[in-house]
Image 1 (cartoon, rainbow, N blue to C red):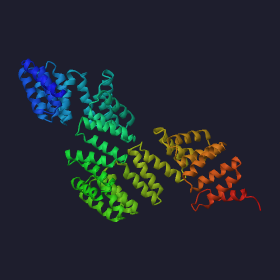
Image 2 (image 1 turned 180 degrees about the horizontal axis):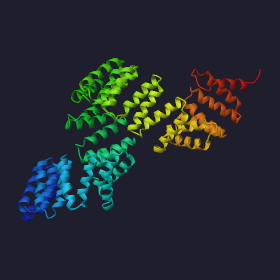
Image 3 (image 1 turned 90 degrees about the vertical axis):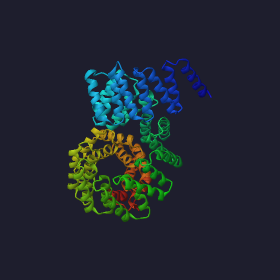
Image 4 (image 1 turned 180 degrees about the vertical axis):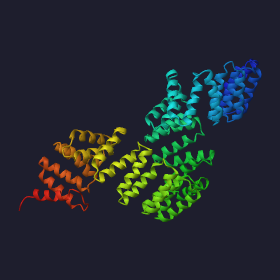
Length: 549
């Protein structure tokens, strides 16, 4: 009723001031809120007829047409505003931004170049320049511009949003999330900013907050596909499967051909055990987009549930034939053949992928795994080294290389490689743990350094039994037997059938004077059928610990 009353008052104001544009534009805004777009357009047209040289009315019209997806009319209105304006550079920047948002990148770039020649500090022009940099992958250049804009305009939400995108592209997730939160703070009506923040929250498994942000994004822009997908995924994670399905079915009606929506629908149907519907959707996706590997991989659930791995490999081969250049499909086939033990064919596929996509690290890692499985450690090391020439910071390659060095007795090379990893990733638990263990095995170990590394690993992965074992062993060597026993007991609880850990626990208990418990642990460790390096020592110790008859 209040809304209707407001509408009547606006109409009365328009009649009372027939030569004024302001009441007409207020009336247009009222109609826009009510989604009465024809009436809004009529009010705007009347305002233009009253003041045909007023650039601000054309800008108002451009906003209206952009919101109602009448993009040609929006462009025409912006050009009219440009012709009428006393500040053409500012309008030109708006037009450039419009072109960018509608993927007319050449036109946007041309306008921005022209604007910045005349005024290199115009904020919106610099923002569009940063957007173009992000599109082209020049994220560091974009970040430099965006940080400068924020120094001058610290509450500009649109800049924070672009900064979040640039940091995300650089893999700086914390910085990206921080910028996304600022974008939401200063541009609370930006649906994309809410969706981006929701994406970060989903990654952090903060599902309730992810749902809240994604729901806000959808309320602001019901056609925001990314927001709908994030909302459905966060609902799925907390077993609200029916709610996730409703979200996806709603967005699917708006975008029936969208592959990501169809795929997420299939995932949700699979979770609801509607397998036939899920498979139909997956096959529908693969017929439309033969190189969409996630759909092909999800089909495996159906085949493997029925123990039909051979049939699935055949199905993957069919898809590879339909899209022979689809690297994802080839990787999937290679992985399946590797798991099946068909190492020769898998090797050929990964070699083909190395030629096809030299920067794809997966092919190098899998070829290294194949060589390791064949017992060819030198060749496996060579594969990791080939990858490191192309990607010197590849964590997988460095870790794989260090592990192979360790296995082949090249302990100095292993330690050096673990140290390289820790220079790049100071908190990386596997490298810290393994290096700590290797230092502890030295003739004159630096137990202080070994302890420092073991504590880093423990802090990163407090529930990892192997790390507890390493930390316990360092405490044992340092004579801190109570601390050692505590760590070994934690490790044994998690891995009760790992004889090496029980052996360590037995040693620590013995050192504490708990002879009976030590004897029990040593006997238990030798009952395990698994072979372990310390078995001979354990047998000798057990004999010496048993009371003489």
